[in-house]
Image 1 (cartoon, one colour):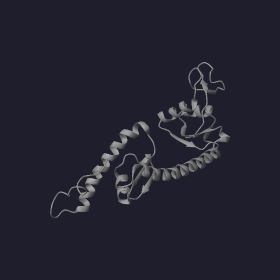
Image 2 (cartoon, helix red, strand yellow):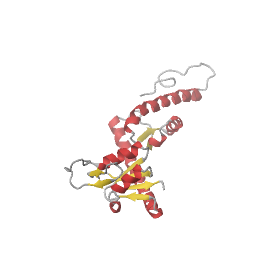
Image 3 (cartoon, one colour):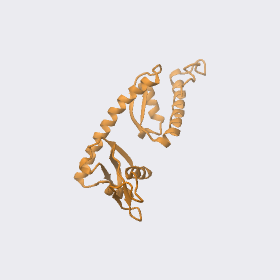
Image 4 (spheres, one colour):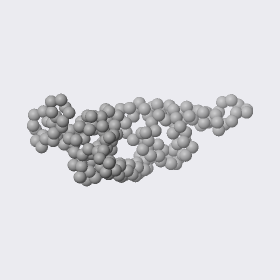
Length: 208
């Protein structure tokens, strides 16, 4: 989407006596609402973190109208009107990578606090129970962690399975755990391999 309304390719309406800055801002705010609605149609299915690029004034305007503030990972400051998409993607990835790293370190520190306060769960089996109980606030998972497993009859207990070809085995219980967490509206944070070694590659910060 590109803004081509009053003040860009066509003159502002109203004639003599109008205040151009206020009128242009009104139309820009309408445009940013349309952008936010269009983004929602994509984000409701993908729910990926968002990098917002623009000059300070436009970033502030978008932040006023967006309903997706929680989805904004970081911002990229500057005028990128004439920047090719592939170049903009590179710039966005650079700031996103830094933001992801800061976020990862922050959540790992919060996990340590949770361990000290004894409001956490480690191992995939304990994490599964915490999520099933509705106690899970944040699920932390190492990015390449995959684990076959099987459930008991009522689906409450999860047991690690070392033989993936065993009947009724779940090929990757980590995916099921993530889906269950997201279905409950919880947050999932992916961390580097090795970050959760002492938790056996997965941990949960619980509500209590």
